[in-house]
Length: 388
Image (cartoon, rainbow, N blue to C red):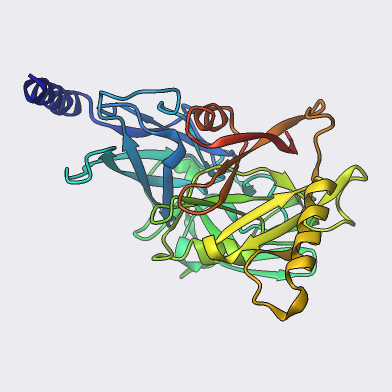
């Protein structure tokens, strides 16, 4: 009886997959460079398990890993929750989905591929993606040009408060003509820029004509790099652990292919040092437990002092230290007051699991917070208040 039901459900899954191809779709119908973009899974045979949904990005290719319900077990931890992929430069993107069924490790995964377009701004000018970069985070300088440009020619340099981008263009091919440009040209282009300190910058594009007479083509715009930095959360499948960091070097290391870590799309605004933080922001202590490769953050003076005292006591007597070790201040953040977050902020909930070694997760989006409350992880309430 059970095997017959399983066969029937398996057949239903196959039919559903064939009839409705799975895809990752932008939550905005017409995403444009500069916007923060989120993608939502659609058309999967069974709902995805939200806590493990994650992805990696290589250029214009995003690879999503989703664990699906088997049709027998379902809870509030399953659903189609949007995944934040940040501010993308203009172009056509490929979203690959690798879907496995929970509890059926021997079953082959299912695959699906979909595509989406991030439009370039219509008005010829200089732009940043995202429009207001977070401090110290990598971003993209975007050019929407009045003439077809060679995207491979873009070169960015930073001199003080000026971000200069040199490029080559075709003076005989205005983009307003409606016709195609020469081979290897596009009406828009972008180039990565390494993270900058908070402040006001001039983004300046300087174009020189290629192969014909023409004038220097220049676009300039004032952009603001925000005082806030943004944390990034990663998930490691092998350990089932989550890791939160606001350190740009650490983010780059974790995003290196083969690291084993994938972004979850979760993150929130913090400040990297006291001189740019508001007066009511407090330092977040950071402790690391080597035995389980786990990290803990808190703005609670009680938490930080307790861990500081524990470390001091355990280090006495020359014995080998195996406890929580201080890593200093991770960032500055807003603290809940009596468990509540004020207007203009959203709570960042902390969850704890003792399974597979102690691990904490810090969830900010409503979908992920709701999903985590429907798992075996213990809710520890709001840990931070993130500015909206």
